[in-house]
Image 1 (cartoon, rainbow, N blue to C red):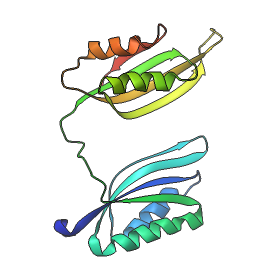
Image 2 (image 1 turned 90 degrees about the vertical axis):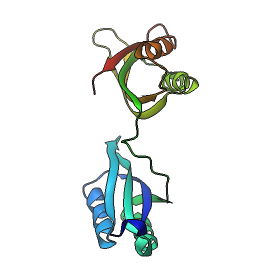
Image 3 (image 1 turned 180 degrees about the horizontal axis):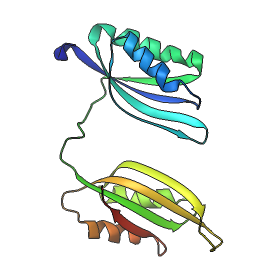
Length: 176
């Protein structure tokens, strides 16, 4: 592919989980000579969802987009985003990986993300779960977060910000 002729196509995917969804996406990309650049795809609660970044020549962009949209006939719902602004993951960021634990309650995710946003911390990825706190009789909220922090923020600053959210919230900094 001629790099100057390449166009970016980013899609979001949502479907009831079943085997063959990724194969349908990759078959469609291959039929249109699209290059699968990167993706994040997951199964959760019996559903399959994600985002995929393709590069394709300009003359095949519209036909690729139409073919991807036609996957709805297979129960695969696609939203196509043309010429999305792509930032390289190689760009310098002050990355930090943390785990947060607290008693589960409505609004815990909002409380955490509000504190992060108010301090200009970007959430690159968040994985959450709720499980029974062994022998304690209550539910425990746990989140793993990948963060892009402002250059002037330290790990200890971030821990203080999050631990101020509530008395029961604990933050652990993780290795990559």
